[in-house]
Length: 306
Image (cartoon, rainbow, N blue to C red; front, side, top):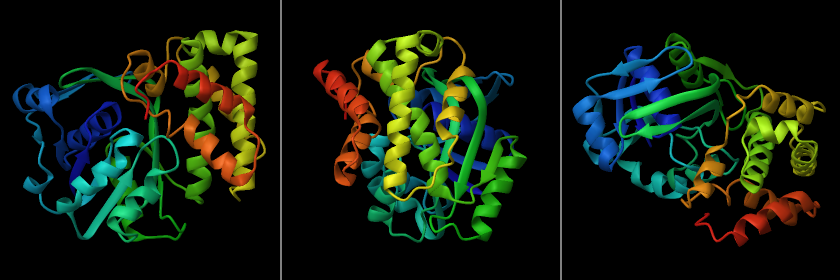
């Protein structure tokens, strides 16, 4: 399968490397020092499942140089999706599929708005990974996995092919019976964990073992659960309990990408996570005081959050 990975950060770099290692024809879209490192030294992955390198690497900063592909894996940050959608158009042909792996729940609709409904499917991933340096990715938590499905929850050959491709690459893959439930299940976890982590400045171990921050985390999750119900997303009744268990399963030093970006003063996914909860809750008339407070506090820090 001809694959383009648009955004070679912790997510795109890791999953793209796994696919390339399995023999798929992968081209990475990257830029700057990261691109130069890929072209000259290859892609190095440090992983809990064993370290490996991809060399040589096919990479470019120009999607037009790639032409149409079978699959675009969208690995940029959530706030970058609208711009990425426009930039990837030269790679989208009649049979192309676009798989977003962003945090949040907005990426599929943003991609559909830019590219039309035909190429876009739903997707999400579970992994703690980040860029260590140019051409160097580290997988630091969770068993890496991908969940995908058609946006209308229909069965399709293309989703089956992509599922089989990830499985051949040794990546745990699941075809969701309801992709919106799958997206919101992760959103419940990541928006709460990111917001509380960024607010406290503490990693998972301290957040979950402190009674006050754990209670804050639980309240934030309960608010997202209520919001999902109001929007017609039928999350299972044990969603909050399972999300808290996922936090308990993280390494003690685990942090979210939003937390790391805010701490470093970089553009972050604040608007796509905490901000999205606040926005959708106002639209639905659902009270989310915990997220309102976190959003106000994080904005007051003066970070370049987007």
